[in-house]
Image (cartoon, rainbow, N blue to C red):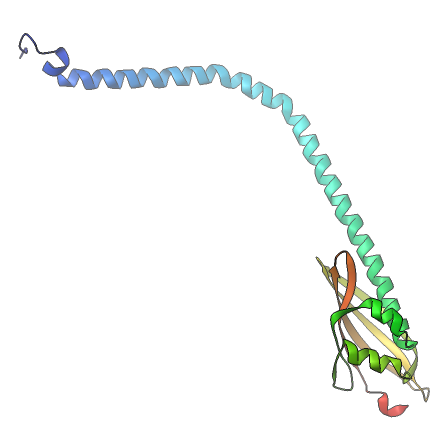
Length: 196
């Protein structure tokens, strides 16, 4: 059926309008696909050209990060090994001044006499004559957990009567402002305070 004199073709044949729109959309999609197919090879070529450089740069950066982390870890282990030796020497020789540098304000020590000492009480105890000699460590194992470190070790000493004793300890360290401080000491051994 044809429309009246003033009726447009789209109004007379609404389906033709939808077909035209669909055709426009299809043509548009074809144009985009065709354009993309023409451009992508060029982009792909540029990307392939850059890939070796990007890959090498990424590899170099990764290697540098690994080296830096490895170097920091080695330095931390070296520092903690020395702190462990300083801790034992300070205990043996009643070196309160060195302990003042080693111990964090929140430091606590759990000792074989079944008491828990805070920093102040521990330093008061260290000022007194030590009930042992020849304090040494062995089988030292250091575990790094970011800014926290655990030091596990076996220890040997002699009572003032010359009797050899053994035990184990675990010390905890925390890095604060780039400096390692001891925050806890836990000792497992026979109580020697009664054998002085």
